[in-house]
Amino acid sequence: MPVGGGAGYCRPALFHSSGIHIIGILPARWGSSRFPGKPLHLIAGKPLIQHVWERCRLCSRLDDLFVATDDDRIFDAVHAFGGRAVMTSPEHPTGTDRIAEALRALPEATHIINIQGDEPLIDPVLIDELAATMAADPDLDMATAANPMDPADPAVADPNVVKVVTTLDGRALYFSRSPLPYFRHPVEGLSVLRHKGIYAYRRTFLERFVTWPPSPLERAESLEQLRALENGASIKVLTTHDTSPGVDTPAQALEIERLLSSTAH
Image 1 (tube, rainbow, N blue to C red):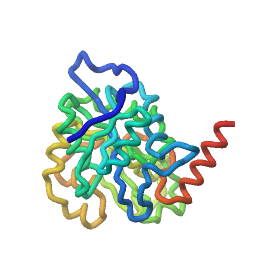
Image 2 (image 1 turned 60 degrees about the vertical axis):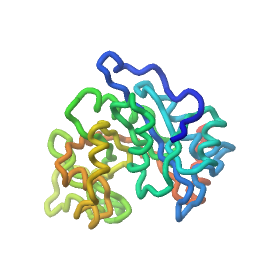
Image 3 (image 1 turned 135 degrees about the vertical axis):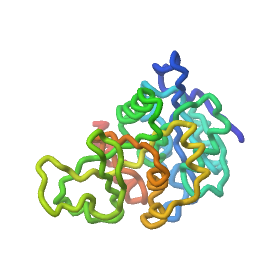
Image 4 (image 1 turned 120 degrees about the vertical axis):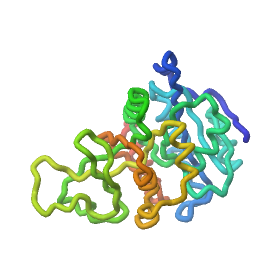
């Protein structure tokens, strides 16, 4: 399994004394049905994956950073801009499976942050918060994040917007594409939580997770995180106001370029 590129770390991390080694991995595949070659699409003169990499380099709580890819073109591009990449099989059905394979070449990692490779405006503070949350609780299986939404927002009914409900101490109870919760009665101060697709895992949990078959609720909703809940996992949900958009289409890439240009002036 080839590993290549320059320095992978963001900054010296804080957890070495406790034996914790946290790495960020950006899964990046070539064959997107809606946007083939997306990771190398140029935005403001740089490949999309480079923008995400540079945001992650602003973190302070990652020990290392890698791109996990299935394509030599992405591997070589990451190497060219000074990043580090791990080659993985093109047969993986999900980014989680790709990350699990990449871990075989990274035996020092104790915790992993799965950072979407198509979010060039991701907030480094959120990544650091996930890393700190995992480091602080050795029994925690996973952590993720969610944005508060107004229950009246039309996006609550959009099946492409994944919602999550939590316990009072912030553990995930359920994720759904349906409106969640259903407000039969108004409850003051209760928001809808829009799930943000960033995950942190304890390594030993991730290695078990990818051996489990897709679960019934996972198959019904097409939401991989439900497999973790159905198997009894503990998932901490951090509330964040990071609403950084992803890039799923060329039109969205143009909008990101516009946003980057406006912040540069």
